[in-house]
Image 1: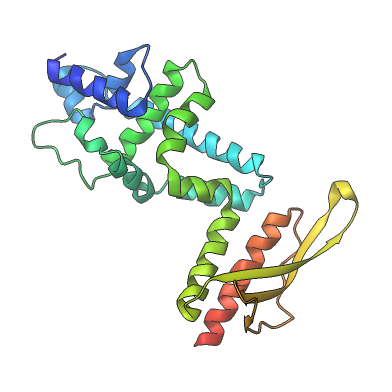
Image 2: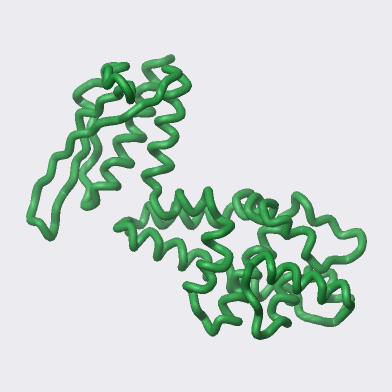
Length: 243
């Protein structure tokens, strides 16, 4: 390897605050297929595939730990993680393009290579740490996937934030949303419904807009899912009313 490549590997490990036991894994994760063909070494492609699966497992476990395990929510987070746009944004925040081993005229910035390499790095850390998901999460997921991390850990936050942004733009003040809850069933098998939403000015607790009493969530086995559903319905109701 060239000295400049060794320097890149050292600096990237400093960025991650993680020292690879097998530095060749990191080198592979940072090497594009075009460059690999020239130097006769493996590219990021295998590690990218592995890393894609590792990232999904970590985020699905996050959902599970939050009590969110419905197929629809798992599908949503998988779709978010499969978006090149999301992972490219994360890669940009790390200045990942500065560390990639590429051919002289190969474009990197703005391409899906950034997302591919990010996934490959996750795969490399997974192998280097002897398949330790916690180390992958602590080393690269939690420090760098901030926006997506919030949405993945708690999809309700994303739904609520959209509603709050809409309301704050409309009323130019801080907003608080109050809900009532209806529970039915045995303690081990509760059904939750969120209903009777109220939109209040945060400081004075003045009701800013009246929402129909008919508006309520569907029936859910999880309180957070009921909240997420009613926040989305409130937003749809207000947007329709605003037309």
